[in-house]
Amino acid sequence: MKAAVFYGKGDVRLEEREKPKAGPNQLVVKMDCVGLCGTDVEAFKTGEFLRRGMTLGHENIGMVVEIGEGVEGYQIGDHLICGPPTFCEAMCPSCQRGETNLCKFALPETRGIQGPDGGYAEYMHIHDVKHTTLKKIPGSIDLKDAVLYDVVCVGIHAMRISRLRFGDNVAVSGGGGPVGLSLVRLLKAAGVRKLAVLQRGDHKTEILKKYGADIIIDPEKEEDISGKLIEFFGTGELADVVFECAGTKASLKNCLEYAARPGGQVMVVGQVDEPLDNIIPTASFVKELDIHFSFVFTAKDVEVYLDMLGSGKIDFPGMVTCEIPLADVVEKGLGLEREARRKQIKILIDPS
Ligand SMILES: [Zn+2]
Ligand SMILES: [Zn+2]
Image (cartoon, rainbow, N blue to C red):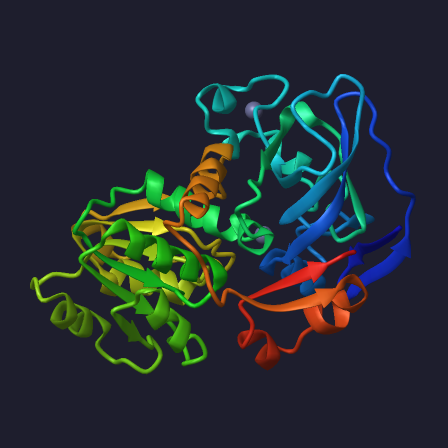
């Protein structure tokens, strides 16, 4: 079978690999579709984050084609979300608390990140059914909605662990990326009072409006972000809760200094890799800000997403902007030029 394998900076090769077999506690799935993630793009650009020699792909939907001995609850033809590890074998303290996203064994075991081969291939091996997030997708749900689980569930998780209350004024910074857009849509569905989005450029204006942004502020053009937000919210205050999704120092600074009200909360959802010296200004301290980090998601969040999709409470039209065959993964996916990339939201790979 064909697989796209990561070897480092600018080096992803389409290789012929052996089709996996299902042993005890294992499954083989035929890939339906795979999301091309920002993490994959970052790894292609820098050579970091991901295990070398591994097939890429951690946003995976596949159909069961082989069931290993003793594996129960799955049938040939089931379409599955094949998510991250869940509840480690050791049942570490994080897993005991149900915080499986914080399990210290999870990250090195995550398929397509540091663990086994991912889904940029015709078939994928589920090497440990018992400890993997596997969720059956009901026939009524479009697989192309389901495959967005990896970005939408990041938003769902952040909202569920935040202090958000019905009727809050909310801001989302970096609202134009896949996670930011998911949050905008989810927040709208959750019933916020007014929803402000900070987003550079105008590439995403149309979809942001469609998803529920009441105002879109370009933080690079607006000289007085606070003034604009206060005027917009109309309560004399800034946002009750702010979600940071851009993963940049500039965006985090905007959230802390210019978007959150005194006593408010900043949910840090984007991973900021830049050095953060002097980023926590006195302003955050005297505002008594609640700064809360949110990291990926748990199997529970995936269940929430599937239920919301199934009952028609949420959808994400226009999020998938492009579908490409596996053979084009470098040229039309990982290696896209900056300008071409900005026009995309979620690129899907069809490995069949
Ligand atoms: Zn991802
Ligand atoms: Zn654990």
